[in-house]
Image (tube, rainbow, N blue to C red; front, side, top):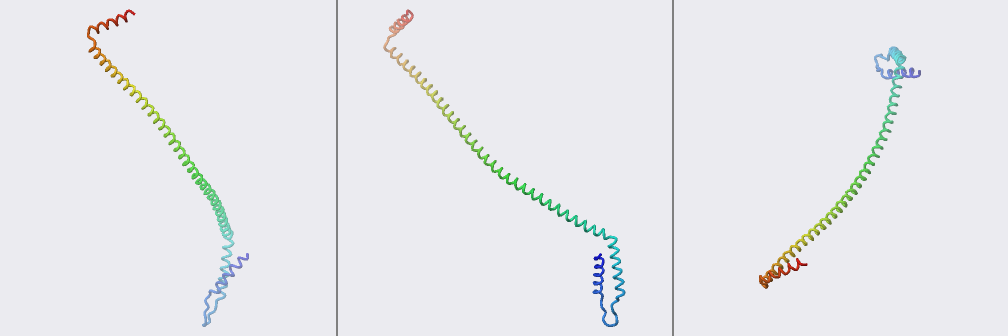
Length: 186
């Protein structure tokens, strides 16, 4: 109710100050006209206040409530965003730790693979050396047998020549028969 009195009083004051004052020639302020206008404005403001006061009040109260609810919603969204940010930062830290772990595991596995490959290469090298040694020994034995065979043939050939030169053919035939008779009789 006090607002209804304060508003017209403020209007009267503003209009009174803003009225042009005419100096000289007998023109003064038209207080009667001013008073009628002020009453007219007060009635008009009262009607508007009476008819739309509740709607205006409801609009501003509703707007205030909307702003408060929006602020609460924004505060809630901010909290959720901060929680998601913390979660993402935690996952990033976990990803970095996981990457480091995977990198270290990969290096360890590569080292194990390297050692396994080197060990396998050593075994294969040892087998190749052993196989080469056996082949060399077999070839050496084969060569030795071939040399013995050639030497035996050479010796037999030499002995035959010497025997042929020292024995005459008749004695030779007699020796063969004598050997055969000993072999057959026994």
